[in-house]
Length: 222
Image (cartoon, rainbow, N blue to C red; front, side, top):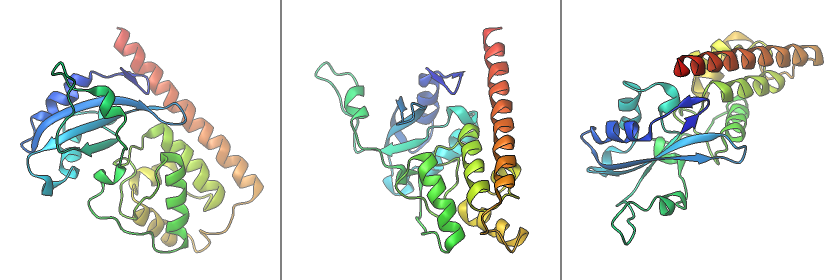
């Protein structure tokens, strides 16, 4: 399948997951969200449930590029099978996804600035809740979605925030603290001119991302 323009072998991710000592079974499936963006979801059966799925993400990141990391890991008691003895992938797709499988400890956003950041993340990532210590990339975020977040943050919170800041401070708590330190007016709504500059900057970042994707596709074909 193709994820954000990159060719992905699902079996490669499944094989790697099964090499983890706590994974008994693993299946990777592509899913599309309401905006038509395709992402990967992992369905796993664990040997020790108490360890959770967070260590699996760390394990995958040590080997795979970001676009091959599942946006969600759903822990199951057992995988469903068809009458023919094969894994029932259709049944897996009907399961209600829970992104909280990626979150070890949920912490409620504390003040207004954290709540504003959380609201933007929830809308862009299409999640019902986001904790103040959750990592943007752990929740399925990627560079293209980061551009959308950057535009929204600049328009509603602070026009001084940069894309580098978002990569440097990937959690709500760390980003909010950075904004508090950098300016005492971080909650002031930017001017219309600043919002226009922000939109132009976001479009430049988006064009850069598309150019990087185009080059990656060219390398694939070669």
